[in-house]
Image (tube, rainbow, N blue to C red; front, side, top):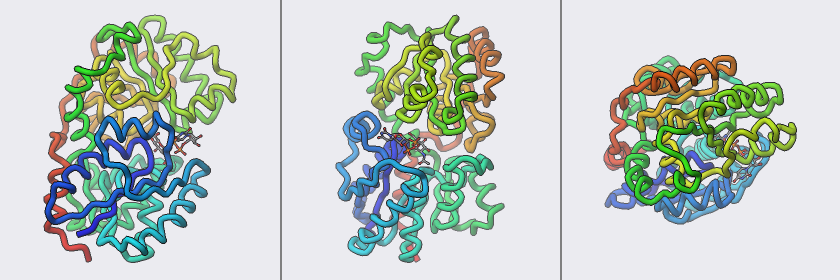
Length: 361
Ligand code: UD1
């Protein structure tokens, strides 16, 4: 069975790495890797391929940056001839980025089966581009691999036939567990920044809802500045966020923080694993902190990953609650949590075993 695996943006890379590894070892599957080019900078892209041992993509669409509709349509336009030429038995998409939905659409028009890894997550927040991408991709998919029980509930409510849904766990956790020790051995990031374990927090912010409106972004930075009086804060700055800091003239508001470029995978894992807490609006980091046992403050009104709240270390905080919750963690150590079911490092293997006996329509 020839499967065309799709990546486009940074959070896809840690998900595809273990899937490619297990597919390559399978006698029954011929994997092909396609990169849409949604992310392309050295520190958003190449460094992840190197550190995670992902093979060089067989096909690159080089779509690049643009508005959401433009990016999705450009990806479809460039992907369609590839589908014709490659004629795969199925395509596999991961997560919820623009590359995910665009390739699922193009394959569906050609009646090529779609496999979605990390299906069924719902924030119920239609303002998030990712929520649109998730709902549309799931509706188009023939096989839906879910990471947590909420995925099944959501999909069944939307009318997905139960036989299409498989609970396999979390592929991103495969990658985290595989590289955690390596990060501890090889990363020099704590020494370079003169940080002590437990003596700092890590922050990432890039959601349009947090950084695209000046008032909202400035409010978050004001709260974070308060926390930085008690605890050093390392802020890894996404390209979108850096542009907004400059555009809104917020340079003064980030002066008390330690600003870094987007970090390579191993340094980021090392930074998060030794932090007192992590402040974020990322989807994946909510899950990674749960596995690392580090308290996470998610600066959002909702999450599509409720298992990280119920079982893990995650707490949702609107901008007004950031200081209170962070101070509570500084005093008490915060939520400890436990690792959710099947987040055990064997998810990609389960996916590939399932695919080996799967009959695409
Ligand atoms: C995308 C995903 C988001 C994910 C995030 C991780 C969608 C809708 N959003 O958001 O779910 O959490 O990736 O980073 O797919 N840019 C660069 N270099 C790059 C890539 C982007 O400078 O290599 C800049 C460009 O100015 C671009 C902007 O970042 O316009 C935003 O990139 P884009 O891929 O559109 O969205 P993200 O905010 O990264």
